[in-house]
Length: 142
Image: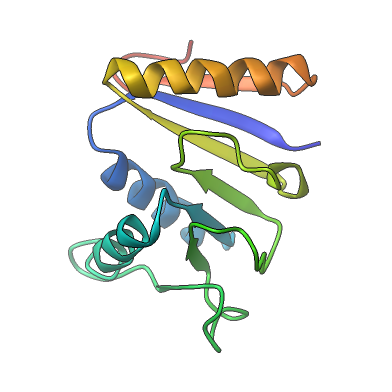
């Protein structure tokens, strides 16, 4: 069953996604960053290619010829699922295909609209029997 984790009170969701991606890649994991739309996917891709400051996180879109070998896939449509390891959701709704992944990470910002959408996703996962771990980045695990 998919492990579900929520990271709450994130000031900079892009930065947190990059930090989590870097940590996963260092552990040999593969991940998909599920962004809100094409524009945010492009912004995320540019950010990852400049992070960490003394390196980069190799990433590409799922339609790339290099997708099978690239540790980080950035997508917003979910039509080509390259692997099933880690999924970081940056959309306001739950990804319809999340259950095929071993681990799902939800990143929740500080604004009330984002928190309200996250509460709906949280209840969705909980009501379906998923065990959820929550981490308040401003404090400790919830």
